[in-house]
Length: 174
Image (cartoon, rainbow, N blue to C red; front, side, top):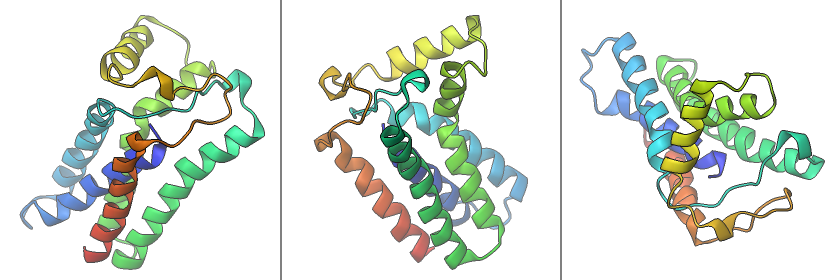
């Protein structure tokens, strides 16, 4: 999945804690619910068919690094700036940002494992089997490209674009 899909869902979850929960809900409860829901959303959205980058830290090219930074960082910056422009420095901004990071956490964890920062262990194997083979079971294999450069856009990415644009619109409406 492209990173901006997870960022968008995380931002929407963070925003929803301020629009759906009663005003009497303590901030710590909002943050806890939002971060947990965003983390879980990663696995749930991975069940939706989507393409991937064939990412390997050992074979990381400049083009791939730039593409990944634009995808992950660019979408996080755009959504954070939208939230900042709407809410300023506020609890809403903090929760939206925390939820985007929480929605990325499973892939960040796997990136650290692949880069050798986190040693491979039984827990890592359990997570990897769950994340890659159980949750990605519906991902068509023809969307993976072996060259490690990038992958083609396909109809499987439309929902991610819709979520990104929806997250921007929802933040503006606030």
